[in-house]
Amino acid sequence: MLQAGADIDTSETLTERQQAVLDAALRLLVEEGDNLTMTAVARRASCSKETLYKWFGDRDGLLTATVQWQASKVRVAPVDRKGLDLASLTASLERFASDWLKVISSDTSIALNRVAVGHAGSGKDDLGAVVLQNGRFALARRLKPVLEAGRQAGLLDFEDAETAFRTFFGLVGRDVQIRLLLGDRVELTEATIGGDAVRATQQFLALFGAKTGRRATDL
Amino acid sequence: MLQAGADIDTSETLTERQQAVLDAALRLLVEEGDNLTMTAVARRASCSKETLYKWFGDRDGLLTATVQWQASKVRVAPVDRKGLDLASLTASLERFASDWLKVISSDTSIALNRVAVGHAGSGKDDLGAVVLQNGRFALARRLKPVLEAGRQAGLLDFEDAETAFRTFFGLVGRDVQIRLLLGDRVELTEATIGGDAVRATQQFLALFGAKTGRRATDL
DNA sequence: TCGGAGGCGTACCGTACGTTACGGTTCGGT
DNA sequence: ACCGAACCGTAACGTACGGTACGCCTCCGA
Image (tube, rainbow over all chains, first blue to last red; front, side, top):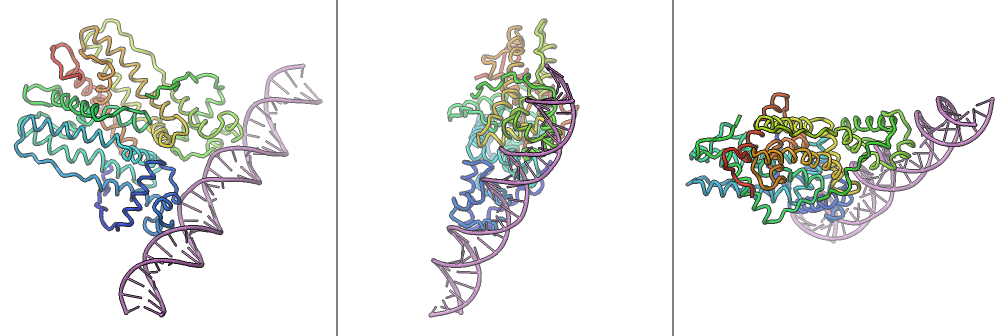
């Protein structure tokens, strides 16, 4: 399952300067992809290579630090589940879907996923694990409580929250992420994202909504 | 949309020997990922580097040739749509889902997608386009006629075949592909694949099936 | 005022790898 | 038997880049 300690805080023990360096590295990563050089990072960050190596060990260390730094920036607050009715549940789901689509279509997410996928092949570091933890698994951790609350409120009907989540994930993402990663220019405006969010939510409610007392299957 | 001439036949104008070389390169690609060297390919294929460069130009040429060679091997026959009823439609959809899951979880597919994703960042070649054409878009081309036939037979109800296909795609794949690409060890046995195939098909039919005259939304 | 720590810039080293060059060998055609 | 083309194996070249060493500057505490 590869959940091995990949979500350590790591947000602190980073001085201002180091964060600035990592931001520069991140920007460069978005522009250049995995073929960014230590020299380029040093130049962009206006620091010396020696400092890079002292702080981050080696190239892989810098990369993982960069990925974790970006991950630590997107921590969001959990949703409140008081007074849950169908409208608020729907709104929550739509918001999750919309946020998620915005994230995976952002330049930095695409760049980060690209390098992580590339590195996942020859397992020198665990960039893939880090990205997974702060991407797909973080989303699950945040969404599952909402789903459980919806079930307890009698609005949703499912047996396994994990399965329900994965279906929602599929309905929202569809082919978007792989197409973006492979370089396809998918047009994702605010409008289409919003439309996809409500569509996915409606489809999810059609499959797992409990109000009619009938559902498709959950197997 | 990036459909630019990426599905040229390219299956011929390849001598036996060249195909063997590409097979060796493919095997090496699965083992080593994108950090395979020309020397390694030459050694594995028992040919000289000079030959590699004469045949394929440069490293990128060899890589694209390899990807296209693999793509040309998976051409499958279209499904027959005579005598379509709910049972046969269901079977077709389940078969598509099952085949698709088997493909994306195969070692070679994962390796190919990894290098394509990696190369999609710095666009020197169009590996991403090739993979996309022979992956996601090829599946769409094969599945859409089935969906259309299902609609004409009064079994399915949707407005846009593309949208319906993308939903099916999402229901089948969910988070599997990105997790595999990122190095997560997803357990995909024959049994789970089969189960996922029927689950996705049932969910799809629940959303787009026309028999009850009611569908969720198609937006 | 001074000394040392931290950090910048840069030159340098070693190596891996893409690419080229070259001698030797096989093989089909004449 | 001979010629040339295709090809194998390998050596060699050039370069890019990861990693290190060093000189100099700045700042800060004593």
